[in-house]
Length: 166
Image 1 (cartoon, rainbow, N blue to C red):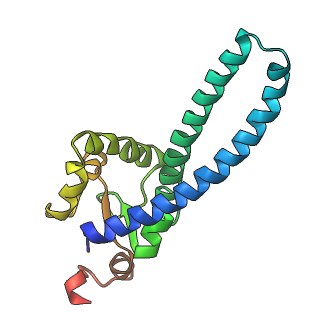
Image 2 (image 1 turned 180 degrees about the horizontal axis):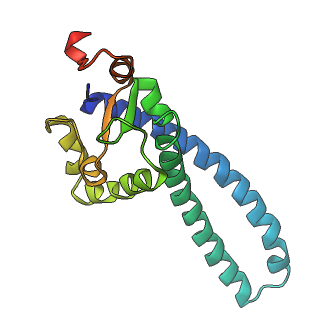
């Protein structure tokens, strides 16, 4: 029933590609507006031009961070219960009652991934070795990444449907 490490890794790679393309597009649009706003400063080089550059660098950084967070949090708390990468691999994110998670829980799950990064990705690798295939951020948020088809079989009344029975 639980999605294993390799399936989750594939989903993560797909999501990474999607976020990369989105960040390139958003970055291009942001750069276009940045140059348009920079014209008055370029005509009159002052200290405010340097300040403007630092503000735009900060805004660009926040845009990149917010894009990833909102993508994961909105998608995993949506009716689909999964990001596009998880949908492509047939996985969904659920709580302990196999129900959709809230935006707040999805946000907590996303931000707790930072702990897994700080542990040299050991928190992610844990998904390959724990009984319920949970990574560290899943344990913190009390979430599970499960096979969508098995979850639907259980919802249709097939009781304790398990991956091995299908």
